[in-house]
Image 1 (cartoon, rainbow, N blue to C red):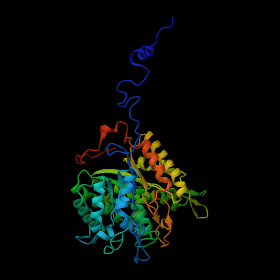
Image 2 (image 1 turned 180 degrees about the vertical axis):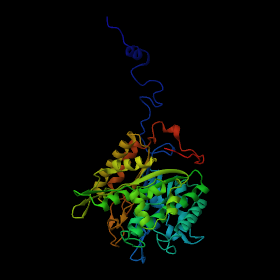
Image 3 (image 1 turned 45 degrees about the vertical axis):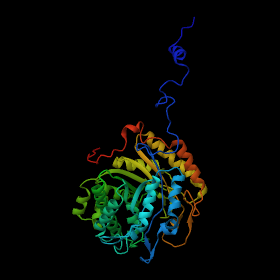
Image 4 (image 1 turned 90 degrees about the vertical axis):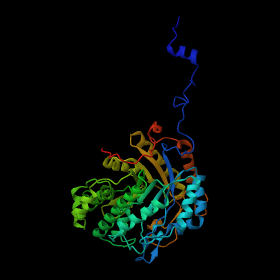
Length: 446
């Protein structure tokens, strides 16, 4: 006679599955699907509204993407589209260059309208304070007074919108400094290593001083740095010293920001190009205050292949977001957010989105705390194929919606991701680790 096993007894007593209590995280518990909620332990799904405003043509032309893409006229509709997507988090940049009109002088007319609507809709803004440009009266990124002026602006924003907790003080510092100070495309349009180092140290100092002011008025501030995750693959039997240096310089903004000592080669490069010992020691004093998140922006065009003849090709994710961001994480050990991505070809965008999400899931499985993801941007952009350097009025079809505010295929793809994963937590059982409203006092040592 066959002897009943334990499972037979369980089935006879409790039935075949659907056990009491399983709905609370057991076999039949919630799997994280469903559109995002505002639970603070949940993963942050976001989009952004493109807001770049550098100058070109020796400062005579201001490229304001909020204007060129119609946001000043359709801001209310655009913010409504964020909610239509089922999103609760928005990377949003106020036009610093037009708000800050002089020392102690601010024009909040547009900002107040947009921020009031963001608050009314219950959208969580990650407020972007400087995005590739400065007010005309400051000049450009070579101005050593930039950090003090920008700090006063950050303080004014924090006082005016005290309900905002999340900030990106200076967007893509490395990109700002490189394109303005070494590539000769934006703002000061310099093509020198000294111009690059000067712009970079001023931007990092501006970010730190702004961060100090934000923490002064909001001591539980969350700072989401947004920096380009880059790499150059050189297909040459003997790699050039310049490519080796460039692959080290991509870390420089975060090294200075997070007080991580760069290599001797990079330190000498900086000091050869104007960084003083006192300035270096100031940067190495410690991380800025508040809760810090390392945002990595990744586009396929961030990875480049350099051929033996010196020509550059776009490689489209040889390493991908996962491998490159893993390098950044192992260097800084900071919580991570995928803060920007897109492609210019609308028909390829859904697959690109799925590839980015696959990388995020792989990163989470490897134990790295990934807090959020951003498709950038909500609306199509203009002239980013020339890095805004030429006024061609060419539409880059990279938005969730086109310039007529009609959804592109990637919008439906993103909704599919949201519906499947929208309620996952940052880490398993993340409900126990919710963002606290206590001041960020703890010095985290790794």
